[in-house]
Length: 180
Image (cartoon, rainbow, N blue to C red):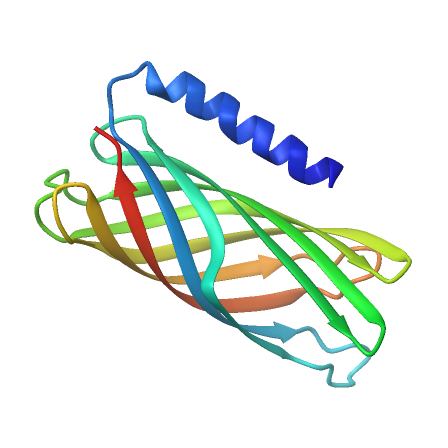
């Protein structure tokens, strides 16, 4: 819970700084489908994971530093309990996004890159896993201040003390609201 408080405080600080710049801020929720292909250990195959998170996998805030470039911190939370065992995961990310057009009344294709940090508690064990990745998508306008967002992403989650490295391929569908 302490990490969640720190992430939210950092996002609010960045939001406070961005409000003074006169550019719109993008607030969004994304549903996601991900396949995690875990690295093999000593030639033995390991379990891969498929996750569908609906209605929301993550919450994000996009701060436009220019008409074409935005910085997007994001946060997601997962809690699972199966047969008395629990898993809690807090994910935080930061992406730098380049939009190929600044015309918000038309579809906006974008590319991005960024990093992630997942804090995981499984039973009595805790671990932190870093990742880096790329994204490609399009924002489809759905009114003055709304857009539908379709995104494909790739993340390389690096090996940590307790978790193997993995390649994560995902597809997201989201909704964005833009402040004026």
